[in-house]
Length: 410
Image (cartoon, rainbow, N blue to C red; front, side, top):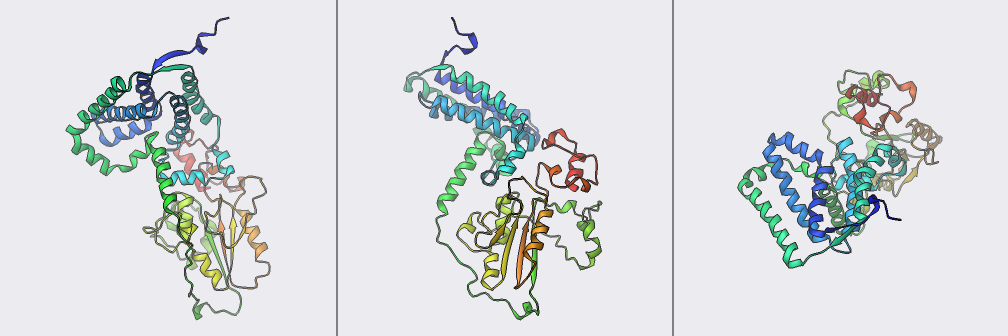
């Protein structure tokens, strides 16, 4: 019995395949990138030139990487990763860089589960799975290395030079002024992020460094009874949405009776846009411009200073984790029972439990889930839903701007 036509193998020249594969990569996974190029340049000619330059360069990469025993596994691997990355770039406008990759690697199972849905599965199946099946049915044929492959590489480089050289000034200016755009280019973005992360980790072989060995608290800290400092961290708190900062909605209503006693620091800047960067930076000895992400793996932080001076240091966790900050202090995760992400009120209950009999000076850090997106609607109980309509899905592109803001403000 003959096989159905769909399942039959067919032959294809390896060099022709490389050209077609990279064409598919650009067309299927990079509409966001080229849309951004067009928006910035306002030139269809510039965008078209960028397309052919990238096609030429990616084809060269394919001709170097794709051989008899590597072409299928590499092609399928890239397709599946590309399709997953494309989903997040397109739907969440995520730029894939070293910081984002580090954030992904440190994401816990609960956060991951919130991002999994049928749309993501459809992206992977349609743009990655089906082409992967087709590739599995190809019988690749190779030609002489010197006769065709090297000639095709030379032709691609010639095309690259023919477009770039006459427009070198415009291209250089565009690249210099719009560096973040490269983080939208699949697969260059995540390959670059992986490379940077590996290099960073290879450089991070340091001896552990204590800090503040001779530190001490001055007489102004003396008190008749134990002191308590409560430090609330995160997450995704936007100053623009705080009524304390002039926002026209009462998003800080419980604090209004104490407004005269609140010192509000309005001129502040976050170290980064991810938990993996911002949390370690808050407690590091360096300022935000000098901070080296990963340094807390081999350097003490401000919590160690408190501990050395006889304070009890307690970290209460309701987020992914403390990113290395709480390694040497008491840590409690009241939501660690497997029930999923809890409301932040669970931290208050745990705080009361820990402070039932305060016997010494204590600093307590409460690491909230806060307004962690994109599932904003899961961050508050129903009785806190003051602003409507809301966005009851993690697919933010299915909600209006008003719905997203209302959900965040709640």
